[in-house]
Amino acid sequence: MGFFNLQDGGGTGRLATVSAFFRLNVSAKTNPRLFYSSRDEGKAFNLISTDANAAAGDYVFYLKNTSTTDNLYVKHIEFHAANAAVWKVWEVTGTAGGTSITPSNLNLGSPNEAESIGFGDNAVTGLTTVKQVGTHRHDANGEGEMSYEDALILTPGAAIAVEYDAGTTGAAEIDCFFHYETIGKK
Image (tube, rainbow, N blue to C red):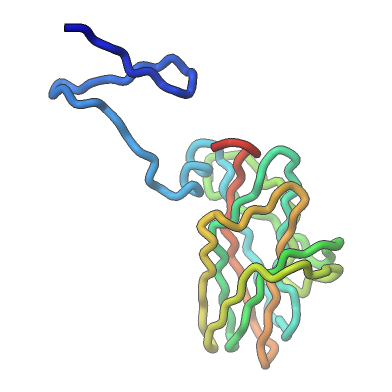
């Protein structure tokens, strides 16, 4: 009886193994891509913006991908506000102005910094909206989440902003979880 080798189709030359019970040893990647970007490459981040005096129509959050080799994938955006609010996520252009904010690497052992520009903690200026890519609403002292499941992709140079709409000026906070992958990587 003959035998054959199962070899990695990715060209590494690795062979498949069989357990003592004659079962093929296999595994699957089932965690979110954000997990693997954080664990394997240290390229998962959270950008936090806190505006104590957000007013209706203010852009309270801005994120631009400045990488030339990686796409930025937005996992989800969390919204928190003291007042009932409508949140609008926009693709934007222009030169953002305001308070610069720095993303935190979710892999605390990684020295990597995000290749991005972030603004928030007060109204962001200098933006022109291109198209709306999301909206969310919640009650006073509420919170919500817009889950993009990595489908919101900021290619190099692309940017988004979050607009806060409420009847009353008040505290507003954003958490944006994102990661990077090299363009063309599968």
